Length: 280
Image (cartoon, rainbow, N blue to C red; front, top):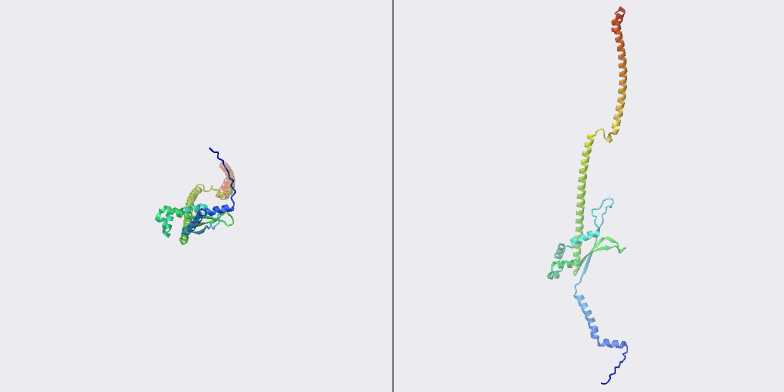
């Protein structure tokens, strides 16, 4: 066996000409996929249907009467109200009616069930709050309704229909809330009136049972008492005078009895004359 020798040849660094030569030899693998991507993108752009976005802004007008004067019948936050109305409007029944009315998603309905078409429409409908132009965190009392579709006229008509449904739903909610509030206030008023009538009946019965002893009759009772006290004083003075006259009459009666007894014991003419004169 003959020994083998390993020889290593150092390779030089690649320069610009080497890279150009590599690109020239493999230009088909380099530019082919790039050109294919460009052509596929252009063809896809032309073949992909256009999508138009129609948008409408709905402004929520707050209550015109101040809250400190009349309490609002709606005590729900605006975002909650919008979400509640959106759930009602974007329900299966409403979206099915809109799809059938405007003839939307004709190709999709021919090859997809209606539930999938409705989900597709829900993805194309967006309800977004409107941000304040002066602040990124604040929200103004308004929201935007957007709908994207390949036909711009149909997209605009669908947005108009959705906005009208939002307005009608808002009016219906406010009417229901106002009716419930009115009915609640009426029930409370009837209950309060019933309690007031019962209290008035009890008060009338109490006045009849305690006539003359009521607090509002104190002044009249005091005046009557003063009059009775004056009359009692006058009557007492009359009684005293009558008692004095009685005592005087009794004294005179005793004197006359004594005189009669004396006359009866001494029947002299003078006495008889005196008696006669006295009797006369």
